[in-house]
Each structure stands twice: as C-alpha cells, then as structure tokens.
Length: 461
Image (cartoon, rainbow, N blue to C red; front, side):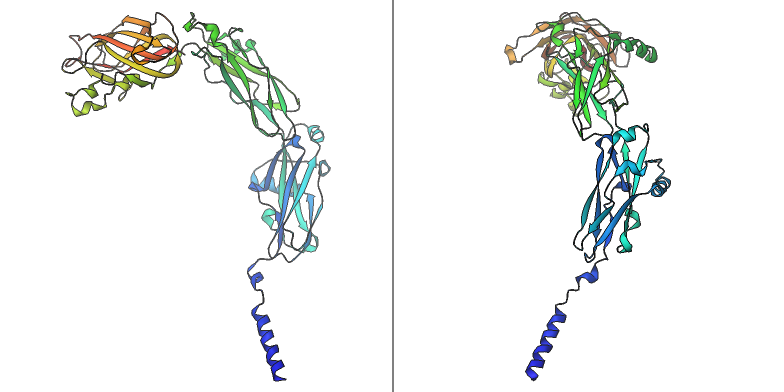
C-alpha cells in the first residue's frame, strides 16, 4: 500500500513541476487597429477601397467579437487633437463588415472598406474622411484608447507638371536627337486605373510669360523643336510620368559643322491638354522649357597632352608652385585655386605650348572665352584652337576653329574674360589649345616671365 502512496506522491510532484507558468508574464488579450502614423490612412478617392487591419494581442486565451462603426464624434475629436479639418462623410457612403469574430488563437483580421467615388464626387471637392471606431461585445476585451479609432481620408487626386520652368534645354553637338523628359506627377496615386495625359505646345503663352518675367523669349521653330509624343501614360499605382520634348539636332548641322545660329532664346510652353479621367484635377497645367543654342561650355575636362606645361612641373619652381598644374587651365574655375601659371624665362617650357583635353562628349562652340587671372595678366594672348571628333594621338585629324591674338585691357588686378571668336563651328569631343608665344609686357606684374590664365571656356552646346 505504501508503495502506491509513494508513487502517487511522486506523480503529483511531477505535475506541479511541469505546470506552464509562461502566461504569468504576458498581458491580457486586447483588440485594436494596427498602428499607423497618427492612426490615419490617406487613400485616393478613385481607388474606391482600402484595407484596415485589426489585431488581437496578448495571452491568446480569449475569443471575442469586435464591432466597427462610423463615428462623427471621433472625427471631431481627432480634428481637435491634431489641428485637422476633415469633413465627415455620411455613414451610408462607406461600406464595411460591422462585426469581426476572433477565436482564442486568431491574431489578425482584415476589414475592407469600400465606397462609390461618384457619390463622394457629387459632394464637390473637399477634405472628406470617416472615423471608424472599434468596440468589443460585452467589453470582453480591452480596446486601447490610442488605437481605438482609424481615420480614412478619401483624397482627391491632382496631376500636374512638377515645375513651372524646366532647366535650359539645348541641342546635342553629337547631332543626335536631344530629348528632355518633363516630369508630371500625381499627389495621390490611383491603383485601379491608368491615366492618359495629352499634351500640346501652346506658343500663345509666351507673350504673357515675357511680360511677367521681363524676358524676350521667342517661339522655337516647329521643325526643330517638337513633342516626341502627344501623350503619355501614368500607370495604375505609379506617381509620375513625363512628356518628351525633342530637338532634331541634325537639322542644325551640315555634317559636323554647325550652321549659323541666332542669339535668340526660345521658350517652349508645354501644356497638359486633357486627362482620360476628367474628374482628376490638374494642379499645374504648363511647364515652360527654355531652349538655348548658346550655353556656357566649360570643364572640368580631362587633360590628355600638355601635363608639363605648368609651373608645378618646372624643376626650378619653388615648393609653393606645385599646385599650379596644367589641368587648372580647363577645370571650369576662374577664382583663386583654379588658375594656371607657367614660366618661360628660367624653365624648360618652350613655345608653342600645346594642350589637348577630352571634353567627355561632343561640343560645338559659337565663341570661346579666355580669362586672365588677377595677376600676371596679358602675357598669353595669341592662340590656335582645334577640334576633333576622334583622338588618335599624333595622328589625330584636327580642324582649326579659332586663331589670332585676343584683346587686352591692360593690367586691372581683377579677373578679365575676353571673347575669342570662332572661324568655324565644328562639333567634336576633343580640343587642342595652343599658346603660340608670350607677350612679356613691360608693364604690369609679369614678374620673371610668368603668365597666368584663369580658364579656357566657351559658349555653345
């Protein structure tokens, strides 16, 4: 008998030892909306539906039925707490399941909220929303106050040009068709439909633009600048599309030689003509695209030849001169630290002094701009400039595009930029710049046969 009692005692002890105490460290079950930023969901009106997530968290020992209903009072409280001004939609404008059953083990349920966009559209555009409030039958489970209400805002969608004025658009010196993609965006993407956006060039807007901005833009020649397509498609769910404006660059050239171009600055007003869904608002209907054949063309360019033509490579130069390297002549910088200097009286440099640079892509110059620096001015004034489409070292086929002696105002102590006219407007990727001789003037600060140039740049595209 005592053996049976002893066995029962051991069994009961084992049962106590195996008791699951984990629930002692978990909170009781609660039901709430899944947290979002400010408990707010913004959804495009035309999507006509959205999903809300309701979760049950905690020990997982209790089932319950959650109830959902529209609450204007909750929306008013939300507006007060958050400084918003949402207008309450009538409760019958939205549809959703009013009850959700959770078993003990359920942790997540999805509720689909639907509406008819035409019904809401009939109210006229406004900042409409519904507040959907959670409760639990018989208060069986707690609903945390912070996640008791979800605001669903049905937002009107507005599509428009991303900017009023585009960056300056120019032809391609490669003679290829140049294309500018003008961004068009929508504030509330619509997931249930594609939107076709139709465009046109509206030159009637140029006069008003000039009057408002003090400019003198002209209409671009229609055979040169046009829309590559008269419409684009904004795909469902996407936030942007673009119009395509093209310049038929080859019309400006005979071979690789640029025809004469005028100094006019052109303006192309691209207007959104219509949308496939007329209920979508247009926020900015026009983008103005400036077109120019005369833009700044400057480095930094890659030096291929002439590395030793600088004070920094002169073996007799002091240590402070090491920073005066040949690439400074083509770095696009006029100010201190970007200037180039060379010495001819007591160094190894001889004339003509030749530099070759790779401009990265084809360029064409309507004029060059040669800049003296603030010191050692006027010592390098006579040049030859060549352009080539391909580079093959000593076998490169160069075309002379500019030569002669440029102007000189005399020593001024300030950076001076001089126009240096071209003789032939040839497109090419490679530029050869030759300084034929030094001037060695007897006045100014030519000190010890040194000369400086701030930069070699140009105008064109």
